[in-house]
Length: 132
Image (cartoon, rainbow, N blue to C red):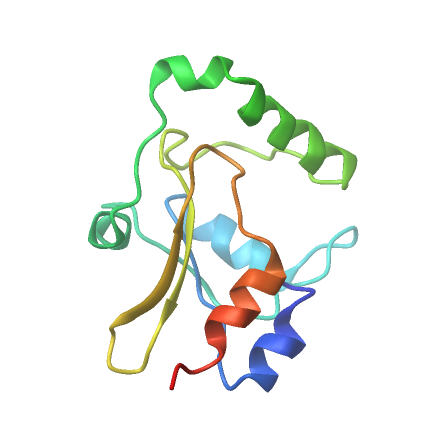
């Protein structure tokens, strides 16, 4: 999302990352590191999974850890330079991406099939265009 931030803001929107990890990890992501720039948007934690439940995001079942799609996602992230840090959150929580309007209605949502399943940025940007 960091790379898409200018386009997202040009569409009149913003980004809020929500995770299940420790608060210090969210803070570290926002601040950046010598080998990683800051996120450029807020990152908060939801250890009780309130937002995940409200958005209907699923959980990774034990057998899904053996699926080729999950491991392709991990390998792709590794090739792009992502590295797994300390695990403090809920590894079974599936991710999602939502476009939420100011009135808190969900305009668009992508519910991940497995870990690392994110929509293309172009799809997210298209969802930001107001419907008529």
